[in-house]
Every structure is written in C-alpha cells, then in structure tokens.
Length: 260
Image 1 (cartoon, rainbow, N blue to C red):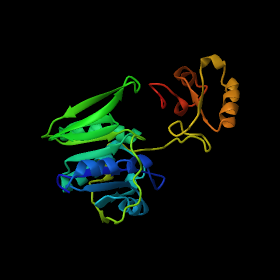
Image 2: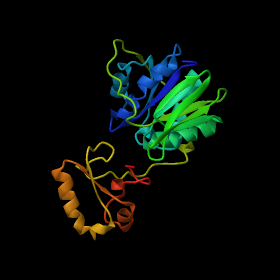
Image 3: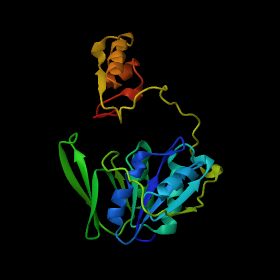
C-alpha cells in the first residue's frame, strides 16, 4: 500500500514471534489512511500468515521459501526489498530482535535511507518521523528525528508495545515472489546451536540469579542453578564468567549481553 506502513513479521519454529505482533498497534497509529501491510517471511508460513491476518492489518504478503527457514541478512533483505518495491510504503517497521536490529540499518544503507533503531515509541511531526529512544540504561529518553524524502525504516524495542489481539475482520493473504536464487546468495547458513531444552530465557524471566567470577569455578555454579530453580528464574552470568567458559554465552548479562 503506497504511503502506508509495512511491518516485517518474523517466525520461529513455525510460530509468529511476539515482538512482531507488537508492531501492529504502532503501525496502525502511524499509517493513517495509508493502511498496514504485514510481510510474513519464512518457510511454511501459511498458519502464521492466517494468524497475522486476523490481528488488525489490512493485507498480508508472504515470502515462503526453504531458504528463509533460518535467518540470513541477505535473503531476508531480498524478501523485504520485494515488498517495498511492490507497495512503496512510507515507513517499514521491524521488531527489536537480533535479526531486526541487524536488518534495519542494512536495509537503510542499501536504500540510501534512514533507520531509527531501538525505539520505544514513534510519531509523525509533519512529514518527519520522530523516534523516542532510551539512553543511559533507560535513565533518560531522547527524541531522534529523520526528515522526509528518503526510505525510512524503524526498529521498535521488543516488549515496548502491546501484542495485537484479534480483530473484527480478516485481511487477505497474498504470496509475493522474491529473488532468492541460491547461487546468487553470498552467505549460506550451515548450522545453528540452540540452548539446551529447559533453559530459561533471560528476555522473559521474571527473576534472574546472576553469578560472577567470585563464584570460583564452573562447578560452583551448581548453587546458582539450584537457587534459580527454587525461584523459578533464569541463570545469568557476567562477561568474565562466559569468557572463562564457565557458562554459555547466551546466559551473559550486562551492556554486552542480554539483560542490562
């Protein structure tokens, strides 16, 4: 939809990511009369597309290809390029996931446009887009403005907005072709290492029990594990601990880790 808002919907293990559903409300507020189009990217995304179609968007586009089963920057960017070329949106929104934070600046650089990253809120000031971002570990908020005239992308922080619920009407779902010739893609994903089953996510845990180098050894972290289990929480570790190999890097906290 020309002059509307395009949102990029990510999937994980065949399920829509909640951070993507958080984009729908802000997109509706920003779109005005332009409408909201959701682009669902992945492999076997039919059920996800049907889910998103019932959550308040005006149209759903799907790029469904085995090459999109796992995220790679170039392949996903090509899928988004195809949607932008067809719709000419005023603004493209991405969720503040690992892939969304990677894609936003990449897409803006390719298009010669602007990207507002890590935004908690967005608004229009005339034809300029204003993004509100937390700084100094959330102690202050700053407004960053980009002017009109260039392709505009924005990355919204995960958890900053409500998940869109069911809507009264269901949007149409349309397949979209993208240039995904394997021979032309420069990066190929060979393997993915996932955390062991049962590990709590630091992103969603209500309680995090953290240990540092003072714990003494990898074996001594057993007491941290026990306390976290008793509190129904997650285990976190400092960078010094993960650098020593005492704990896996997905448990790292702090400015260079998951929780800050």
